[in-house]
Length: 311
Image (tube, rainbow, N blue to C red):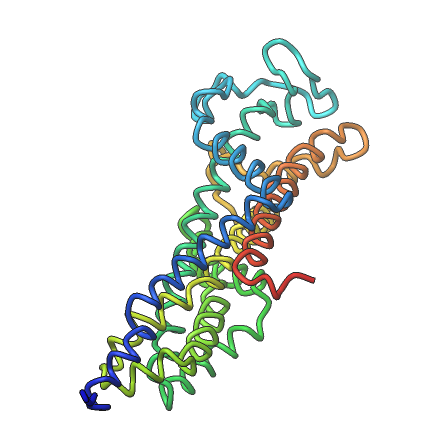
């Protein structure tokens, strides 16, 4: 009768918890999430809005009737007489004689660039802090999380305003300000997700096999912790677009008049809300609809990755 050495058999029995089974579980998780996402009407609507926004932003130089750097889009008008729609200006002009359609199209381009870059900056910075805290624990976790708690105690928009006011008025300053305000959110989220994964059975099995901590963290814990971070990045894009408009409205946007911003359009038209409501309704609707699209898609992605979160 053949006997089996339990010390030899043990790694084989546990290999499924750390090897291909873990990979298969991750693959099936994303496949199931994709199927649930496709069946979600909110996800489809959000994806269509986001896709439309991205296409408009990318194709703005092609479909816009004027270029923002050209003097052709600036027409001399009197503040008391704002021309309405015409063959040359489909949506009309604002009180300063700027073509409204051109501003809306290039405003989408500006919002997309700042939103994506600022979200990426926040994601990278937050992932570094949260990853270090979740991987090392101990005094590293305590020190980094106390810093994160201090930053989280300040509203993100107020923090962005403070940073933008300190480093100056420019698109780069807005990107840095909004990105820095999102760092503590990503850090807290990734750290919590990693701590949850560190107590999973497959991590305990990997430790019992003698795998190094760095191998476990990079190969198993981190890949299984990125789901909530991806969802948060999608939702942060909606927040970033609103904050871009908010900073521009507060006068902290780019001082260059050739750079179109939805928030600046609201400022320029705020005195004509009753006489020419379309001057504020159009940029306001662009901000609201775009933010709604990212929010719908982000919430649908959250439900797809974690069906238990569905209420």
